[in-house]
Image 1 (cartoon, rainbow, N blue to C red):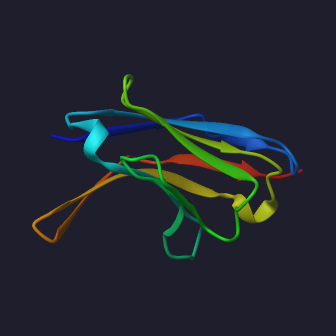
Image 2 (cartoon, helix red, strand yellow; image 1 turned 90 degrees about the vertical axis):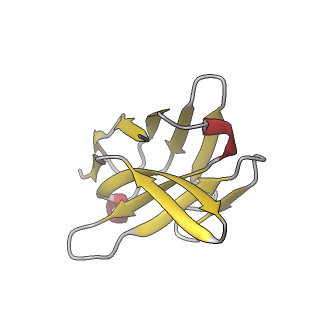
Length: 119
């Protein structure tokens, strides 16, 4: 059973930085695409960034050049470094593990960690 545990959220002022971490277990970590999504109150969950098993990355336009995703396959960890945080970055951030099996998408989710950007 896949388990994803996020940490590192909190309250930060605009312009500040946070580093989110996600510890994964119960999976062959190196074959999964790992991602971060977020959901703000009253809004749909949206992709922030993902990193493939080969190290390729994709970022939402709203976070490009401010946010960086990385993974450590030896430690089964994925990280999200967030810089120059804005009020609009306030959301619950979720870690995601994705694999495709015979054309079927298989997602696993963490419980989320709250990020609040406020002065």
